[in-house]
Amino acid sequence: MPHRPVTVQPPSPTGGRRVRVDGEILGLAHNVADVAEFLRRAGLDIEPEDVTASPLIDWRGVGPEHWGPETVS
Image (cartoon, rainbow, N blue to C red; front, side):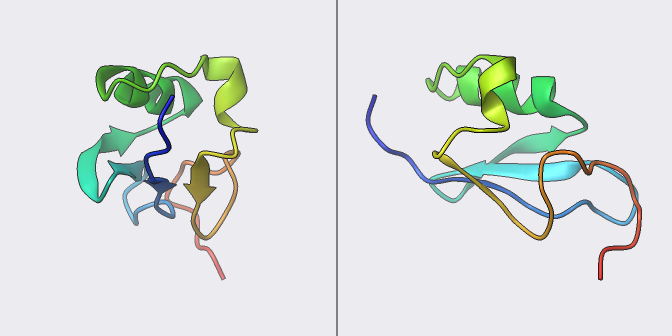
C-alpha cells in the first residue's frame, strides 16, 4: 500500500473531526468507524480496529478517543 498522508484534525467546536488524505478533505468523522470508512473510500483499506494504532494516521491535537466538542487546551 503506498503511503498517503492521513490527518485527523482536532475536534470541531460542534463535534466531529475533519479527515484528510493527501490534503483532500474526505469528511467529518464522529468516530473511528467513520475514519475507517473514509479511508476505505479513498482506497486505503484499514480495519476499524486498526485505525487507532495505524502509523499512517496523524492525530492532530488529541488522540482517537476524543470526538466531541469538548474544549482542548
